[in-house]
Length: 425
Ligand SMILES: Cc1cc2nc3c(=O)[nH]c(=O)nc-3n(C[C@H](O)[C@H](O)[C@H](O)COP(=O)(O)OP(=O)(O)OC[C@H]3O[C@@H](n4cnc5c(N)ncnc54)[C@H](O)[C@@H]3O)c2cc1C
Image (tube, rainbow, N blue to C red; front, side, top):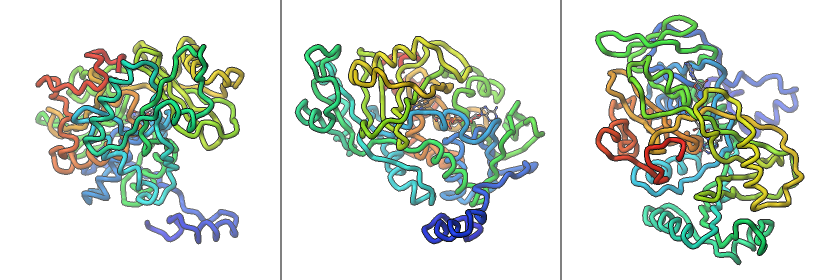
């Protein structure tokens, strides 16, 4: 940190409290773009900011610019339901998401910023023996890979979460739940701000209101970008633009990628007294629903995609009503709770539901995309792996399977078993 007032600690909080909180430094600078950097990252969402931070911290690469067309964290990273978990089964996903969860566990200390990571457990409800058997396979595989997971039979579930609809007349009869105790939630804004502040302190330029409009190619290599603030050159350029990947990738020379842009909505209720102290989810043939409660008391919940391609950051009523119906199935007592706000983000849906962290066939160009609606939990792991890939020009073992050429070689990582249909993942 460049100045003693930048570090957050009890003494500084106390001292600033006494002096009217007028002496805090800006959390990050507002620099003008330089003509050239070693690395440019396009997109200041969680993935772009985390990549810049790990480039500086782990690899000593500080001549880095993160270019953002709006404001940092204004994309999906600042508008999601913040579920963090690593209950994946497929080789490739398993090690990657567990690596990310381990980074989450120390993130507030590492960034000197409270990201409000709360390991409140992720509870996946089961409604039928067939569903239970399929999920047992996943949780057994996780345990064999060293990832925590357990089965809560009905009596244990009732004891821990008494308010669910266990009645005879329930639309879906709950028979138990698979639980990942180390999973939970974090504060989305804080994650973006924490990475931004710490990367900035290490010398990274975060340049907001700077839209990348095209790429500069020389001798078949990407050597920079054109922006609404002029040309900026770099030895390496990394894309981390989520739902905008499908528009930027062709300009960068990648052609059409196996990624479609879809939108996903989230909903927040009026504040309630503490009620939901886990993350509760259900899906697989019974709709799709997930809910938690924020520290301000709002129930934060969501469900499926809007099921058609769009770049609009707003959603439509059919999903609103579908998600409200899903909530009523398991928690009928929320029927009179008012929805306070709703929003949508644009998701980079890959064909097998798994992401890409890789270098591309275009020299100098690196890709971070395909997060579908699960990329918030991936932010630390993705930034860590993408930084390694850019710095070494080679993937780390952890992200080696998350390459674009897995489609060419038929090594799909189809976690959901949904086939090559992005909206099924
Ligand atoms: C409603 C909703 C709920 C979700 N819930 C969860 C969840 O519970 N758990 C989970 O793990 N994941 C969840 N996700 C997914 C997760 O939010 C995303 O996968 C993740 O935030 C993607 O991060 P990112 O940094 O790749 O993208 P973003 O945060 O979207 O950042 C991309 C940035 O690129 C910028 N950009 C785009 N084009 C350009 C350009 N031409 N020039 C410069 N900048 C550009 C954008 O402005 C944006 O700021 C959810 C998403 C949504 C929308």
